[in-house]
Structures are given as structure tokens and as C-alpha cells.
Length: 304
Image (tube, rainbow, N blue to C red; front, side, top):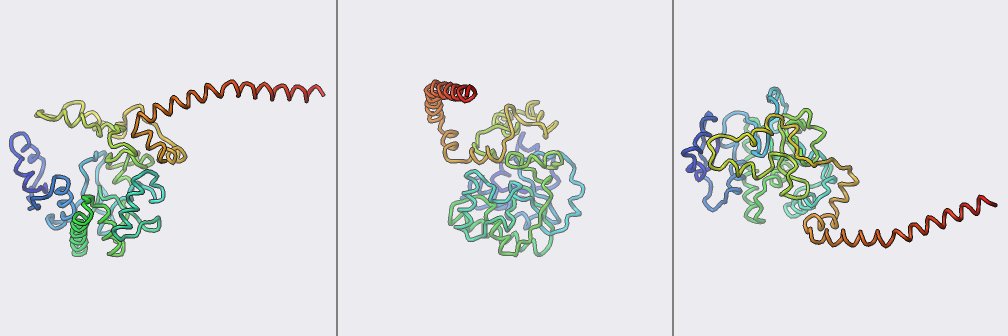
């Protein structure tokens, strides 16, 4: 376990039980001005400095659903899965616009010609090169945080990957199945399900383990309740109904400005719904009249 000093100070009583599941604890000094999110990224981007041997980093918003045999045979010093499983040109929602904005501001190349990796699962060898890479990533993350007040680590990773000549090699999608983005085709063979983001709303609960109420239910408990464990029994079926797939055409529509406004402003949606209902009511008699005229015209033609 790699942990910052503040968090380590909270590991007593029931919280100390997590120590029964680890073989070592490493306490890292993190600057006191960092909040919890920033501290987690500080640790993540500096892991290579504190861990001996090869390691597989896995974000906490994941579920393990298969064994990890075979990872040691990966050919490469750093491995990761393509972000969202698709080229950047197919990031149809506002996230894609943000990525392109960050790339322009931070000075890294953002296009379908270069791979853009997800940092939620990374396999890292213990070599002089990976130590140098992580040092550069950590320093770039701190620079980005100070300059843009962005805690995210993926843009700095893309920047450093470009600076080092794209050394990150692609892991099979099964190692980081980003289920709520474009990961459905890889669900069957998934070893790790990453349920970090909904497509449009951060409050959407499409996958059981995204339900914040599950985690609130853990407070004050000395064991994991059944409702928390249930999705783990079969994580590949832990979707919440009603949930449906959509086509690329539907996805493009849902990513448009009008759909986004309707999604995040229910009042506007209700007004538009009423207006469209009125339009249908007004249009109905004209449609019937047009149909009657066409029918009459066809009858006249037939009688000739």
C-alpha cells in the first residue's frame, strides 16, 4: 500500500483492517497544501520511485473479473489501453472538446495518428527508462497543476509520452474495459472493468458500482453489506436497467448542443416537449387533409 501521511494517520480502528490485505505499507510525504484528489495524483505519478519491481497500477473505480496470468509476458516497458477504445475523432461528447483544448494549451499532439492512453490501468517494468519516464510525468503533472489548476494526470502523460517518442505500448483492451464509454465489445474478455465515467452526466447510474449510495452505506459498517457485494458476483452483468445501447448516429445527436441543454436543464426539456406535442396536434389535421388529397388524386388518375 502506497499512502500519503494524512491518510495514513486515519488508518486506525475499523479503518486499519485494510492493512490485513496488504504485504507492505509505504508512506509518502505529500505537500500539505494538496487536497485529497491532488494527493492521489501526486502518489500515482510518483509510484515508480517508491515501488521495487514491475507493477500493475489499477484505479480504484474498477472491478477485477479475471486472473492476471499472462501480464508478465507483455513486451514493453510501459503498457496501457487506448483511452475510450476509439480514436480521438470519435469522442463525440464535451470530453473530446476538453481533451483537444488541453492538448492545444499544454503543447502536445492530439489526433488519430498518435495513440492517446488511459492511465487507469498501467503495467510498468522496473527499468532505468521507466524511472526517468515517471520522473518526467510527475514533474509535468506538477507544472500543469500549478499553471492550469488541473489535477488530471492523463494530459501530462500524453505530453511526456510524446516527448519520449511514444514508448507506451498498447495493452489489450481486456485489461482496462472502459465499460461506460466504448468498452462493450471488450466486455466478454474483460479482466478489469473500469466504470469511471458516464457518457454525459456524472450522476448517471448505468453500472451498479457507480451508485454513490452503495458507498454511503459502508459508513459505520464493520463488514461489506450484501448490496455492495452483489455486483461483484457477476460484474459483467452489473448494469442497471433501464439501460440500452445506441448507434453512432444516436450518439452524435446526444452529443449535440441541443441534447446537452435538454439533458442538464429538465425545465427546458419539459417546455420543448409541450411545444412539440402542440405541433403534432396542429399538424395532424393538415396531414390527414394532405393524405385525402393524394388519395383523391390517385383515384382520378385511375378512373381515366
